[in-house]
Length: 330
Image (cartoon, rainbow, N blue to C red):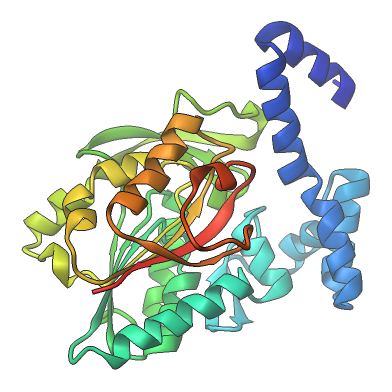
């Protein structure tokens, strides 16, 4: 079906609101190839140019198709935070790392700066919750910044991602610094349905409020979900001992927040690096995420999308996915 035909079908079946949502998804994801073709030209990245231009023109990534047949999978590569394995069949984060060797450079630089500030004022390890750890890029980034002065508790529900995450932990000899848990994070402890997407980093707990193109979903599986408050209680970890939360769970952050209210309500210093996805959830759900941070006393440090960081006004954050770093002072 042509793009116009798909638009007409969505309008007839679901109305103008869903047509606008579909147009947004097209802009964010399908036109991503065109934007990154331009980036490849500016940065003189030949691999990126071939990858994204063929995807934009032919809707098939010829460069990655060739690499899948040429290279061993998973493949060990060099990145800006160290060596790690990537999955050449992943159309998301692994492909980005294979081509660019880095991720979210601007936000990650500020995040590492804030991690170092926390470490300077602590006598013991910096304790980090990695929620949606994927294959471990940000874990390597945190270790790259803090060395062995870190204790990371990681959660990843995807089978494919978790397998490579464990491989990266073992390869980099991080067993003593990182504990990895094959689980989703939500409001409570139960079994949930998990949708595995073609772009592995866009996989997510199934959400009835989320409209997606079924062609993006590879598989649906049952996974264990936990709540952070219950997990910390079971592990006998005090909420005030957690220094950092990094979370990217594709719109499910509003459910994860419901399950960590004890942690968020504590008045101890806490750094949160979150990617919000207002395009994937309702306005009320996204307002809940922002208002929760406001009510808990967090102040913005950095955002990838807005320049006014004087307040967390949710109306300013509705338009598109955004990396947001906030901090609650002592």
